[in-house]
Length: 348
Image (tube, rainbow, N blue to C red):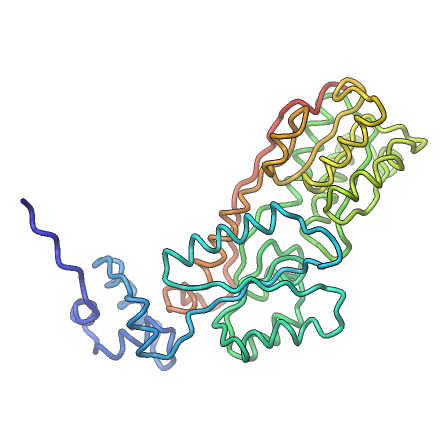
């Protein structure tokens, strides 16, 4: 029977990298006063030896909380975007389990006047080592700057504006997702559209409308070819706003929604009117949430890997905290998206 290989220790890393044990510890804990060259040698030794940090030992030795905060803007007075938030949380929890961290899920309604203070209090009162900000907080430059000024690491999920350049981030190309969906509907012959956008201030979702308009412009179509309304990402807003889109003088042949929950609401309203989907009307969503495969007919949508976004957000944050990522500026990772054609679209 083969003997189990001995796990490498911090002393093995020190010998391999040719530095003192305390220097290795400083690098792994993201400490100061380490040159880029020395940090690179230590990280290389860690990778070559496949060294794994002992989370409990490091926490006891350094007093680190190993607690991260994931901030959402859900308003308790309204139903949340159930899939998007829960999938981000699941991905974050999966990464934290693997890396020996914990994550605190914090909902801070964006309508609260002291919202920035409530988020920043997580750093001081909860001893959170890093913040993961979801939209629209991922585009709140003042908040990001304030957190960074306190020495807190920040990762932005799906920033749609300047948030991209202020902190590490991860997302998909939302503009390209909107463009790709519009191209698919144009290919099917549709020329009159309704677009149900999301909450104001969610810049990543707004970029889906920008991509949609870009695709129309390439076909010589402008604002006369679509009517756009703003919802709040919920099923209820889809059912509430669908009549206004359907009764518009433009008479859209396709309704494009900024997420699947609103698209499911639009689909329900269309069924209530006795419309045959997709013979009478094409409907599309965005996210590829589980509801997209449950509704009837199954929803054509844009797939974005939401759980992977949550997982990579944690991994990026921990890489900064441990010094595994010592890039001088913000790093942004772009994950893949894809149009998923199901049964709610047909030639227009």
